[in-house]
Image 1: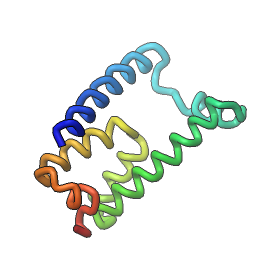
Image 2: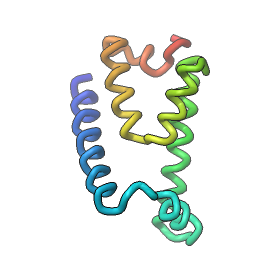
Image 3: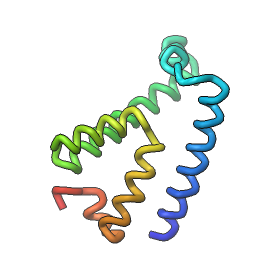
Length: 111
């Protein structure tokens, strides 16, 4: 569990730093670039389409593990729009709250 926590902390820190760098350089208007790459039908677009499916999967899991309550919907929307920056932090919080019990981390209200 320590290795997972360490990975989440390091990956989250690197992602936040890189995101800050890119936003500082390119701004926040990423949708034309993101969907433009998909529309061009090359490898950057394939990567973006794959990433979009992972964002949807993350949001579906987050809402499901919270029983699709109002809070679950809010967390699902955050998971979809904030990506790994949200999910890694969310998993760190869950690991702490559930005292490392992966069954409860993964299943939430269904554990």
